[in-house]
Length: 88
Image (cartoon, rainbow, N blue to C red; front, side, top):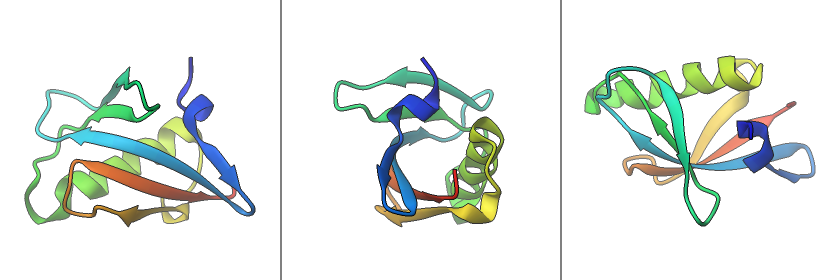
């Protein structure tokens, strides 16, 4: 299964719900929760939005979309986030 299997389409945008685990040894997608939330480990620490920036960089490489086309919509300071992806 690939991460694109969990991205939902709505008109010109795609939506993805993720749970981010910052401060991990490496960046990786490691689990899918029962509600289709994708768990992602990020090596950057939680401080000063470093983990959020690393998440966007990591996902842009995983789904082959420019980093500028991925936006965090909800729960900006929480581990669970909803992302909006343009032009996937």
